[in-house]
Every structure is written in structure tokens, then in C-alpha cells.
Length: 595
Image (cartoon, rainbow, N blue to C red; front, top):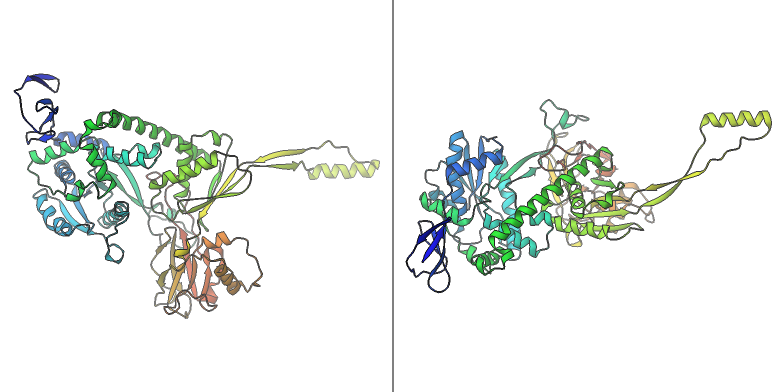
């Protein structure tokens, strides 16, 4: 019989083989089920030249002085480490590898610290092991994959910040891209999510506010710091390569790797079960086979780029027209529709709301919440809003005010009034007027603020110790992923620590208002939702940390319901400042709220 290899025909004897058997030569024999060879697939290793050309394209020829690599020790990341060491050696770029130990397996610690480091050999790569600190030192059994991803991401970003790294290389492959597509398809993701991972993404790191003088914004300082925070670029240079190519790269260059047994257990994670299906791609429906999925992902990626471009242009237009604003004192966002807003695509409006919500949300990453935002947008767009309605998404409350008509009566100018008086005095009659009232339309409006916390979290708080010296500021602390806070004592304080929390119970809010403002208990405060979204301060008593006694109350600094002189504590709160679109300078100007 004859077979084709890369377009050429070769004679081949009858060969007995197992389906999908791999040979170190890089030739893969595929059985047709009868004991005969049906086809041959030739897998080549990734060359240093091929990898270098692609890296220069991704980085746009801007080679950083130091890069990081997320190194699990598996074949994908070890191939990436080898290729990166060859490429960056030409630019004297230092490479730092981070291995995250999840603690999911007993042998994971030794693999991370000993085996992986040994396998790096003479690649001239610094290696660090990062250990995830699970609550109560217990690895979660439920939602492990989701929680592990979140903690791993957080741990890697912190490590990059510590080592001054702005580019982190990730070894995601084309196989991972297929798995991600199927997972998101099962979850009902929008086009934005189905398009899969990008070759480079930007993750912002919230900077602490500058210690600048009152009234001077960080952007005004000589340092030129914009106050928009630093960030880490996640770079995925292997997204166009499959795992077989990476295996062949390691085999060809004698690079050892570690096999994680849990990756082949279909019961361990959802991704593993999908990976098992792709082990025999010919058994999958034609639409889900690799060739078809590759075409589908290209189409989705192009569509996503078009949506993002349209969303960014719309956002710039709305910012110029001042249809979007943020109350940086309270952390509340406002959006007003314009004529033609309802004609925008749902996916475009979803991105618009995500860009705005990112400024005030208590969640650290809204990219994974696009499906929730998309559901909210579809609900609002599917029906006319005739009265005030509240919606909840991403830990935020969205109050939607309906479009309404207003009657405006044309008024008379002061000059015309003087003329009327003179005419009336001289003739005894008034000037006839044909002025009519004009009807104007107030567009639909949105107010977005922090959702009231859940009852289970009502007694959660954080404690900030007051510095020993009077008028000495404490370190900045990020509360609820929204407000940067620091405190200092202005006089002898009753206690040396302050607790910060969000109030849940309406009775607690009334008790606080009564104690702070000497209001009558029957007084009805109209903005309970606003109060419930703002940080509340009180002196911390370890024996009775949740008791709202009159002597322990400090107040709501962001609302002005607090007296620094009376309480003996000065508090500074600043809403976090991030770019509306990560990686760009498009955003609302930073403002200082010193209270």
C-alpha cells in the first residue's frame, strides 16, 4: 500500500500497530481499525527561529529586560522554558520561572522544589516555588478548578510585582484553546468568551495611592505617575501549536518533564473530561474536530475584535458627551443612554457595562463575569422599562430609571419683562404673548453601586491598627477591592485599633445614625442602600467586636458622617483608579477624596 506524508506518496509494508501510537521520530501512525495503517501524521519540533519570529511579533519588537514563566514542570511549560531560554539569550533578558504548588497531591511539593528545578538543567533560568495558602490550610474539594485558577493567578501576579516583571509567559496550547472553547460553550458563554484565549492580555495591578499633598493629584507630580496602576502582560506564544509539537520539541532537545497523573483523570476536573474526548478526535462530530474548531476560533476572534472596536468607539463618544460619570467619593457610576443606544449590539453594550463596572466592583476580575453582565443587558433590552427597577450582577446593584417626558414652559427674559412693564404702565394693557410649553425627553438612566452584602457576611470586618505616634499615617489598605484607606490618630484615641465593615441590617444603620447625628429614632433615612455600600468605621474592641455602642462609633467618612476631631481619628479614603479598558490610557481622571 502507499500513504501520503505532507503531500508525497510513499510505499509502506503492512504494519501492525495500536491506534495513536507515538514514536520518538515524530511520526504518528494512525490505525484504520483493521490492523493496517490508514494514515501518517508527521510532527516536527518547534524551532528556535520559528519561536523567536513569533515572539518578536507578539511583543512588537519591544523585548523586556526580565520575563517570567509560569512553570508547572509538564511538557508544555518545559518546552516553553527551553524555547524562551534560546530566544531571550540573544537579548540578555533575565528569565524567572515560578512553579505554583497547589497542595492537591502529596508529591507536588517535592516535584516543584526538586524535580522541576533539576529538569531546568543549564537553561539559565531562575526558579522559585510559590505555595498557595488555602483557608484553614485545607484544599477545597468543591469548585477546586475555579478556585485554584483564581488563587494561582493572584499568586503569580504578586510574584511578578515582587520581582519587577511585566511580562509572564504561559504555556497554553492549541489543545487548551479547544478545551476552553468546549467548556465555555457548555456554560453558555457569549462570543466574547467563545473566541478563547488571546496571545497577549493585560492584567492591571492596583497601585497604592501616592503620598501626595492635599489637593495635588498623583498625575500632577514630577514623577509623571498617572495613578492608573502597573500591570502584568500574560503572553501565550504557543497558542498555535499542539501538544504533540511540544512533546517532540522536548524529545528532540533532551528536555525532561513531569507527568501529572491528575491531568489524565477524567473525574478530577471538567477540563480533564473534555481532554479525554479530544484524545480520539476522529470520534467527535465533524464540527468539533480540530480542523473545524480552528476555523471557528478564527471567525470568533475576528468578530470579537470588531465588537471591542465598536465598544471602545462608543465609550469614547459617551465620555466626550459626559454620558458616563463616576462619583469617586462614594464609588457610584452613572450612565445615560443616547439616541441610538438601543440599536447597539447586545455584545457591545455588555462590554460597555463591564468597562464601567470594573471601576467600582468589589470583584477583582470581571472578565469571567461577562455571561452575567450579558444576561442583565439582555433582560433590560428585551422589555420597556416603565418604572424604577433594580438588577443585580457582579456584586453590584444597577438601578434603571425609565425614559420620561418633561414639560418645559418657555420663560420670559428679564429684558422682555421690562418691556412688558413699560408697555403696561403707558397703555394700561399687557403685551399679548403666544408662548407655548415645550416637551423634552429625559433618556433612560442607570445608577450602579455596590450591592448590599449577604447576611452571612454581616459580621465580617478588617482591623487597622493606629500608628503609635500621633499624626503618623498608617499603611494603605485596600478595602472591599474598592477603597484605598489609611488612618492616623489626631489625639489620644479610646482604642488603638479601628475596624472597617459594611453594614447589612437596617436596624444597625438606624442605630448608627441615631448615635452619630442625634436623630430621633422615628427618623427615616432615605438612602439606606447608599449607606449599606459605604465603609463604616468604629473602634475595635476584641471582646465585643460587633457591638455598636455609642462610644465605639466613628462613622461613614465617604458620606461626611464623621467628625475627625471628636472621634480622634483622621481617615483618608480613595476609590481605586484603573483604566476603563486595561492596557490603555482611556479612563476617568483620578480624584482625591480626603475626609
